[in-house]
Amino acid sequence: MTELRDGEVDRLRAQCSSALAPVLSGLSTAEAAADRILEESGESGGVHQAAEGSRRARERERGQMEAEARERRDRVDEEYNRKEQEISAQYKRMESELGLK
Image 1 (spheres, one colour):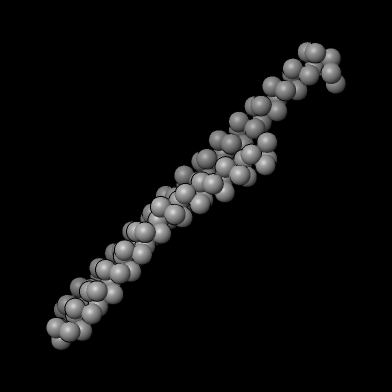
Image 2 (cartoon, helix red, strand yellow; image 1 turned 30 degrees about the horizontal axis):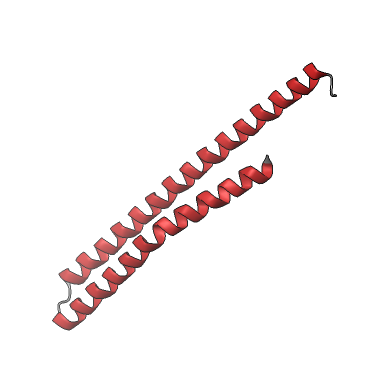
């Protein structure tokens, strides 16, 4: 049971990582493009402050996304543990009823 649970948790982590990788890559590309545009335009002051505010907002959103993913992972872990315990108890009852142990 533990091997099954560990395999499923690893699979879920891989899915979450692979799902977030393109988003993070796209954000990095967009940030680099915005930085180039700002540098080429010679804008400063307010534009840079706005870009910095936007960067902070993206960091907060990323942190929230990561927290939500951790919460989902924890709920999945809890559910697997609960199911594992239920199945173990069921097998023990069956073994007891059949006189196997």
